[in-house]
Length: 167
Image (tube, rainbow, N blue to C red):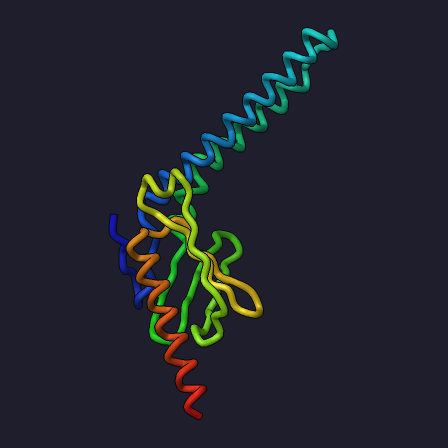
């Protein structure tokens, strides 16, 4: 699915990123549920304890699951934006506390791209742009767009290096 272009060049992630994030959350919380079931079984069978507090833990984990599965991915999709032009990479994020990072492409030291099995199946990748003072990360970006972005940053960094060497 293509990125949507929004106001003044800011782009959002693919809708597939919501699906992949939900898959990661489902896997993680399945492991939590398995752990809770094992702990409850141990308490009942071997320790002869009444696991009344496990109902509280189960309720809290279920509420957290609903929040992280249904609401957080959609909020991230609605509020996360990125923008790339000739000189800067901009990343907007946050729902309650808004954060805008502007990275001059001249300051980029290295670029990491990564993918996992769920991301690969959906055609998505993560890209992390590192500078001396920190980094900006765009998670679950389309693979084609990630590679274009990486080439653009590399090309711009090489042009700046050549300009510095010629001085």
